[in-house]
Length: 420
Ligand SMILES: Nc1nc2c(ncn2[C@@H]2O[C@H](COP(=O)(O)OP(=O)(O)OP(=O)(O)O)[C@@H](O)[C@H]2O)c(=O)[nH]1
Ligand SMILES: [Mg+2]
Image (cartoon, rainbow, N blue to C red; front, side):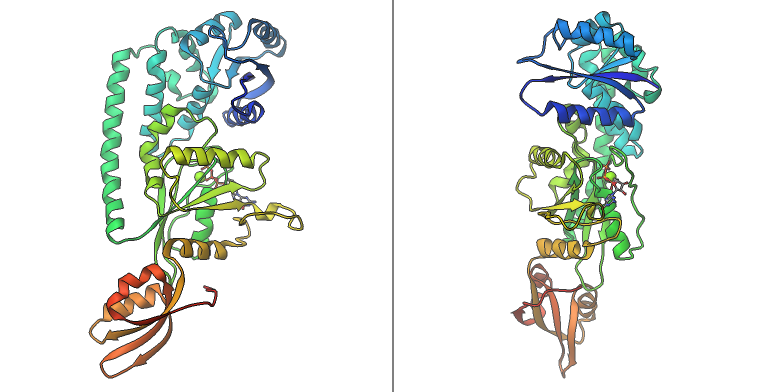
């Protein structure tokens, strides 16, 4: 097992301690043991060695004493910094971006995730080819990183990488075209999209699975695990509940503090789904010590993805793990006991389809299709068979009215809470 020393700078621009904790959890997820952590307060990183020379001397001693096999820096290093540090410390030097790339590489399963991770790798490698050769070749040997960027290393010259990037971008584009077609089909049928977003390991996939279980849907559950970046791409499930309009629920990759820019770019196609959504469910692990930071991180990524304007609901998970006698602001659910999942469904409907109304419709006998749709997507309160039409009273949502416009006789505001 690799033993690592972590190093972070306190530059006053972000929470160093939280960022290092996050770095450590990524390292641990990659089977790396963290044996020590160093921090230093500086106004600006040292151009040559990122931290100051005094700190470097301290770290060098610690490497020998603790038998560390690598030093991980909590920031993106320049190629020159990596080269210098490697020379002075005589050990493997890894930066934050590389570590995140490594875990992405390990988790990528589907075609689009694999393509996007490869693209991020190539973009990361490109400016680092010169001078980073020895470091990269070493990184290829690490056990945690058998299929990591290091593998592609040395033999790749610049031209090859540029060619790879072009190839990957083309392949991603092709895949996107297919995705767009299915998205278009959804837009035409006007099925709204609800997206689950949030920090990695918050419980996004678990929430999707809970709703599938709650409604006894015949769709497959998605992969949910106590892992950082368990999900690396986007899965969508159509959620159909008898008496309610359908919507599509999408689950996607989790976010991280200070996610390198190249990565957000590479995952653009995965994340573009989010920008198209009608409602965002911002999922937060309510028991996490750093939950405020996680929230803030997610908000930042969302605004970067131009999703700032989309209606967003905050949902805290792990209601089953907290002391319920204590005050807890916000809306909470449990994906273990399914507590409040019914309420979550109501919130989704209200936020996606508007207020509940009661409508009286008059449907001619030859419009069987409308009667069928009413049966499937609204809650029927009363049916009367008159001479020339069927009179049907239903409970439905504001935004469904359009669909039945031609047959509506009158509508009344519904004050009763819907109970499902
Ligand atoms: N006890 C409890 N565990 C939960 C709850 N919600 C999620 N979990 C667990 O937390 C872990 C992470 O959940 P996921 O749904 O995989 O998290 P995610 O947000 O999809 O994470 P990434 O895909 O890695 O971004 C899993 O082991 C879940 O079973 C909850 O309400 N209560
Ligand atoms: Mg997930």
